[in-house]
Image (tube, rainbow, N blue to C red; front, side):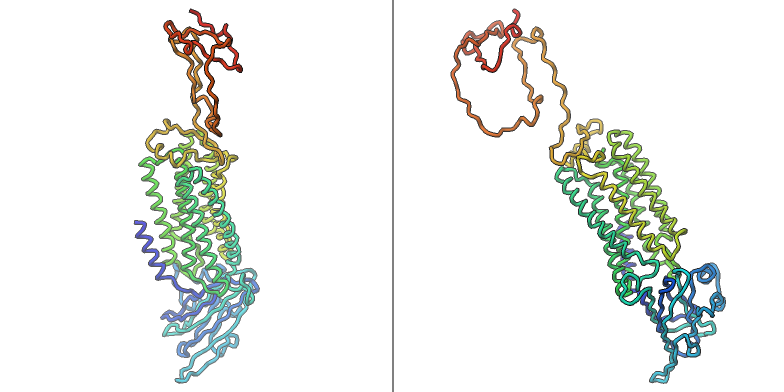
Length: 544
């Protein structure tokens, strides 16, 4: 089912993707309506420049260029879906004295229009003009075309160039005022994620050498890499935007999709670890696995619908944010539900595995911060943040939330002897044993990560004291226990040859009767004692 949604999405993306002349915009407007929206741009208060070239047949005269700004009494009042308005009513909101209505004929000197006769005696108006926008603050301007007396509708060819800086100014010229700080932020996050990917790669190599490279850590690695790729695509899209004023929405959409994929993978990682997967259990119980699969499927489908809705239904006449849609609000609700599942799972995992509390308490705080901050900020961005700064603020904060989650998770799972929160104690070679044994029967015990020493063995039972001499069965002697000797002693550095000497009776010999019937041969009854040992005959004497 998910694969079908993905296929449909990419089909729509290919059909809808084309080069949109966003800051340099050109096209042909043909409509039977008397009023039509054309474009929008966020200009600075005193540096915004608008250049236009408009051509149209004299038969469609007189057409007007209308300039609305974003105050409630102008564009929001004009562009309403719940109220039908005539062309005259929409023009009535404008102030002619402020040059908000540009009459595209030679009679209006500020329009830059002149009448030209073509070779076939066809007369057209050609209008070229450069205007400077001056306002009290950066604000959105919306461009529309009207001809309220027309019976044929509107028909014209236009070219718009909207800038916010001098020629050659990469950081400001083609960018809308609300996008000024997007490119510097993307470059900064790109550099940080390059270093983060290197750090996670080093930790992965170290964990793999210790046989602690579990599937959950692989998910973390995948989430970080997907986030880096998403930032890379976005950075390339905005770089093209800054150089030429041309934006490829397909590249930007792919970057956003990769970042959403990174978010989905990280969410799955947190839910799996909250349930103890690869930390206190080798596999999930069937009911929990089914619920998690259904939830993640719904979350993925909602993420795909979010982009499909943007491509098909977002109105270019409104300054909308990606999450200002039913799918966006649905994702917010699903993320809140995921947070509830996360906390619930951690409570029961800690209840049955209290030894892991040093890891799960910090994880609970990290996960709660990551789960809650995203939805709260999205709701604030949709309603509280001004639209002329929202793009930059949203870009910075959402990338910071993602970076914070990745960095804090890396710190909690850092493979270091000093890290008391390190969660993994079962080797990847032991997972098969975990899957067939009960948790209380597992022979593995948590241990601190040791980067250069072998893992500690489970504690051995304490050695039993030898039985008193009079309680021993006949012929029993003390046994030498290999388990009581440290493992480090079982090593051979070189071979030592010991010369063989014949056994000879000596004065340093004591006679010890072993049992009632024994061999009386000298080799059996005499034992040579080295000079370095002392025999206490009174202590070792046997009572018969």
